[in-house]
Image (cartoon, rainbow, N blue to C red; front, side, top):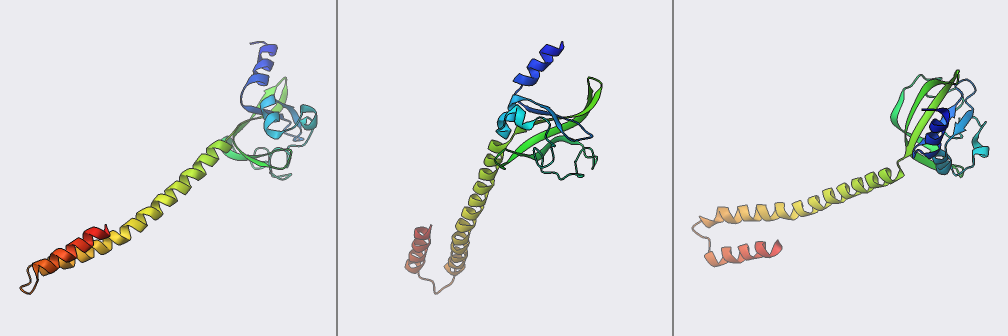
Length: 173
């Protein structure tokens, strides 16, 4: 693949890509997808230091260059122009491009995934609560039916009274 083809891929891919200088932490290049997520133009981003601009890490605490972390499909935060913290799934690696060391960050927006996950947990909580609400009356009915069953064989038990008690339990369900 020639340089023009690679540049076209960089521009068209549906993944945010940022190229960063590992020494100065300045942004060397950024693709349209990443710019769209940030809500900024290329001119507003190129040359900026990545700390607190695209990544919430503080100066001297870069996960890659300072802390030696491997960022491979890890949930992270992207800071948009308006300060919105966008959850992303990010991979960052070092490479040599044109004879120069760089950090290549690639990421995808996972806001929809996070919303779906939140809805899932809310639904699980609702189901748990519903089960608890159903279980309590059923436990009471079970206890009452057990009491009735124990009195069936008692010589003093009246069949009509037992039928009435059973009907009450049926109506409680």
